[in-house]
Image 1 (tube, protein in one colour):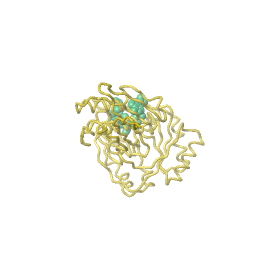
Image 2 (cartoon, rainbow, N blue to C red; image 1 turned 180 degrees about the vertical axis):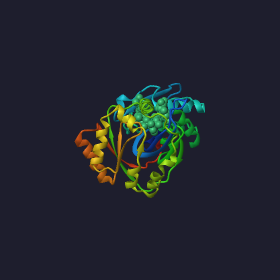
Image 3 (cartoon, rainbow, N blue to C red; image 1 turned 90 degrees about the vertical axis):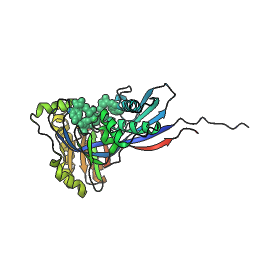
Image 4 (cartoon, rainbow, N blue to C red; image 1 turned 135 degrees about the horizontal axis):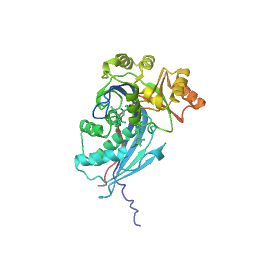
Amino acid sequence: MTPYLAAAPPPAVRVRAPGKVNLSLRVGALQDDGYHPLATIFQAVALYEEVTATQAPQGAGISLTVSGPQSDVVPLDETNLAWRAADLLARHTGVAADVALHVTKGVPVAGGMAGGSADAAAALVACDALWETGVPRSELALIAAELGSDVPFSLLGHTAVGTGRGQILTPAMTRGEFHWVFAAQAEGLSTPRVFAAYDGLVTDAPMPDPASDAALMSALRAGDPVALGRTLHNDLQEAALSLRPSLREVLGVANEAGALGAIVSGSGPTVAALARSRQHALAVAATWTARGVADSVWCATAPAQGARVLTAVAPAK
Ligand SMILES: C[C@@](CO)(OP(=O)(O)O)[C@H](O)COP(=O)(O)OP(=O)(O)OC[C@H]1O[C@@H](n2ccc(N)nc2=O)[C@H](O)[C@@H]1O
Ligand SMILES: Nc1ncnc2c1ncn2[C@@H]1O[C@H](COP(=O)(O)OP(=O)(O)O)[C@@H](O)[C@H]1O
């Protein structure tokens, strides 16, 4: 009898990368390059995007599919951050960009939680492994910064201070696990629009200084969620609220539910609430759901690891 020989699967690499919340986001005045200087403290949360990069036939180029929550509103062309990441890495290394990308969404879209940036970080790591380009992490971080200000943090993960446009990172020391709840909205907010609203509200913003967050940093080092809740800060919050006034109620309901702190996540419209424990996180989530102020509610612990390979199928020998 002739043995059945299954075709070997093509080489493929699956990577996951986390979303984030800005524990503090301090924003300076608009610069000539179109960006605002930031002093921010990023924390990666255990809500993950997954990107699978599968070797495509020579000359096939890049293709992309997306699944998961809100995948219908994610672009499928060369504007997608995962696509741009594969293309940029290929140009950088001189490799032919023949790859089929699949993105599984696990972070709210256009929610101020950097889901697209996580896709870019994951695609960089996946294509680097698939193409065996061996680009060091430090160089991947520079490529990541070309794709977006939040992308280097998604590579790094955990908790870090971000300066410059948010791309210059210094890891922060933390203790223990924090319990977050997120109230997401189906309709996102555009990051440039929120920064523009900030410019309209705040004239003469001073240069942001990471030293302003000394109390927050000591709460992180102590693993003290009560102190962390009191020191959460977001300069973009009023701008996001001016564009989406209904978020005030979302913040109010979190406070009624006993959240240790509640803020708009980055440029919004997701609202992040810090809970005392996993049980308390579920209670805050239930209150948001019962009051009908969020389109979806997500619980996640933090900090979470940065972009990393989950599985890899090697080429057939
Ligand atoms: C606000 C933050 C906070 O972490 O994230 P989100 O809440 O949107 O996820 C980030 O600064 C967003 O980073 P990211 O989404 O990567 O933005 P980019 O692609 O670099 O820039 C998009 C646009 O946002 C504005 N922008 C971004 C970063 C910055 N430091 N100053 C800015 O003014 C600019 O108008 C820019 O053209
Ligand atoms: N892979 C991607 N996933 C989600 N959105 C993407 C992606 N690539 C590009 N985009 C575009 O970027 C916008 C913001 O993306 P996202 O990272 O989810 O939000 P935010 O910048 O608020 O954290 C989306 O509205 C979408 O048009």
